[in-house]
Image 1 (cartoon, helix red, strand yellow):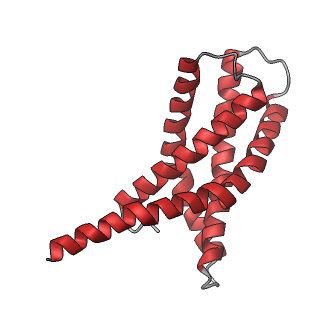
Image 2 (cartoon, one colour):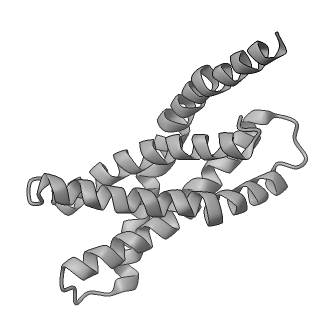
Image 3 (cartoon, one colour):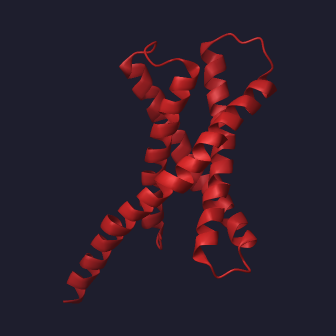
Length: 164
């Protein structure tokens, strides 16, 4: 897939945009905040969440997920296993950190007296259950298709023009 730093950033941007959009709507639904917040509040929450997710993807979760997944699949030549391992590790890492973000923002807006750890485990479980199939079945293949069709093909066409 991505072979350069620029392509990695483009791929990560597309993946984060898709995943954060769906997961934000999912969490709004779970929390019953659809219809209770203004459109501007929803967009600003999405934008902040997207920025945090994108930074996590580029700096912490992405590099570590790739290292772990490549170690797990070191003895196989099947590229599908490597892609599935990277995607699964990414979902685990992103669900871990973004659930912390969700708990922090929820507790800033509301006064909770229940256990933060219990709330976190509940949020993490719900996010993981939604994010893993979303990533493996829908968003991963869709973003890889779009990336290959438009980003990689444009790069190849540009390189062919330079050679002429």
